Length: 311
Image (tube, rainbow, N blue to C red; front, side, top):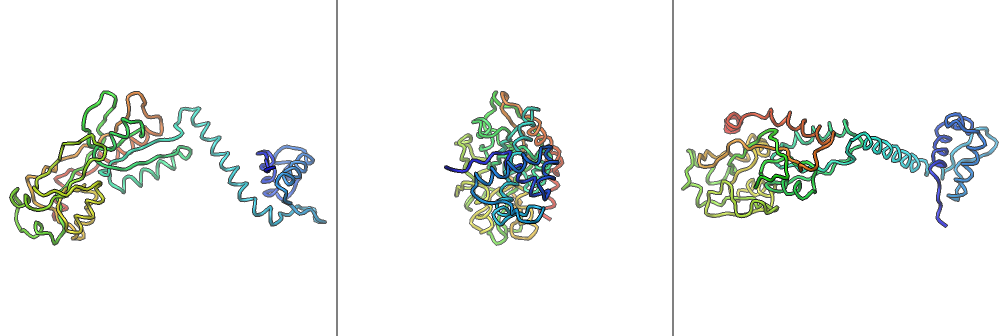
């Protein structure tokens, strides 16, 4: 028969190991010493190993088996503490888990910084994070796969969703430094870009099916995500619009060049926080939205960044 140690036995084992004696463990747990000895004896019988050597020394010493099982016991007790804390938080109205869908338009440094702060502020709340583009964020919230979405593309307004603008970003048309368009030392026209391959992201969600944004070329390569588009653009396989935060370092390093193309509409791109009207966010979700708003609303204006990137 498989061993079935009780939680109480494991707590007693941990107390004896940490205090160094049965009597000290009895005082910590407010039990009689005979009860402590009995619990350890039963635990050893359950596990069929000796946890403490009981020689002539007054203090019990952990055996090799006891030392090996001590770390497992600590982990189990710690997991129990997390469970208790999470249950308490749920009773108080705090979510047990937050499912968050983020657009790639949200700068990586902001994502990392705010999620670190989230972990510190809500250690008992689990996070389920998805990152995508175009209609994916809206699709995940509508389907119930995400509690909160932070993104920009809203293919269709839905009465099921609450939408609040919390910041902005924008796309910039770029090409590799050795691309033919990057070598034209003048403002570009539609005629310049028509015959060059333009890299375009296909919306996997299907919410924007049949709608192309800023597609100006006759020659189009479609890719499944922005990171692939970024990679191919760096490789000189085409030109296209990419989020300014994603390409800022490449432009600064000279790997990519901002194309002076007035026909490309790279105005402000609203970033919204969305959730289902029937499922408003709890304290942890609301905290995340407020933190992203504080950071994203402070992003520089598009004109200022474009000038800086071009320089």
